[in-house]
Image 1 (tube, rainbow, N blue to C red):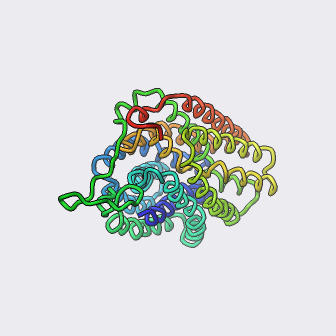
Image 2 (cartoon, one colour; image 1 turned 120 degrees about the vertical axis):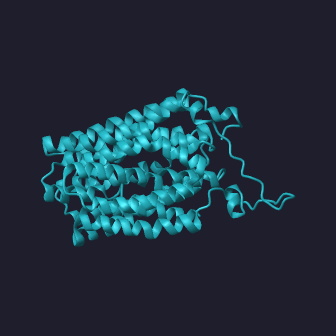
Length: 408
């Protein structure tokens, strides 16, 4: 189950988040669009996906991750084919938005919910293993997508992505994914369940705060705002990292090599991070540290964007992003439990979307106006520091789940 989830996360993130930057220059060249216009395509996608987040979470909490993965994969395949037919700016915006909704249903929320259901005491380690899939997406899939775009152009790459999505996700959803551990004859954390008198394993104990209650608590909004600011910087950089390196004189192939190399190295940091996560009672302190390290990384790149500066930046970036893909799951399940995690995550995604819409568009606008990413780097320093402050505030708040059982 976990291995299949890693494969799904690798491909899902590889053809979306990691590869966004590969499309900026080709679309600029083919259609004459500005960098801000191209970037807004990714932002508009996030807007619609964010609005759909609570519904996706509600679906998963009630019907299980498996049905979401199957429906999401089918529709993502079809919308990738639709993206390949893009011929105008409005189509780029609309098709990206539709595709993003089903991508989210296909892998982002369901696999986090799935692993959170299957693991409790080992959740940090399990989520860190899942997060290596995110790194593998950058390490393995980005070079492949770069080559595909080079050989078949950007439109051919969407056909490739659609076919590959069906080939990878549908078998995983049909043959591997089980909504609950007991559906596979086991129990949480991989412990074999003891059969009761009817011959069936006891159900996994899943507790949590209902979403409607969670949304009324101050800690929800502080965590949501902190995550929103954190991913403002993270997502903005993911979209613009390839264009940034190109603006510094690197070829697209060299830029994609830097991205994939950093992603590959991130596998180690994310595995190490999982072991740390299971030993820390208040995960907000870890989130604070990540925000501080990423602020330092952007500061370094602002002052020195040469080979040495990029090397030091990447070292800080690897540490700061080590827990990025796990932040939401670990912060939210420790504050509100697992039972309604997907719905609560969907609500947080709405808040995160605000920043993720603004971030790449603002960075693109800054580059169009100034010919440089310097002001964008300073913007990211500010948002990472602000997220650190909010995580500090959250660490002083009582977690609602502590009213259900002892602190975890």
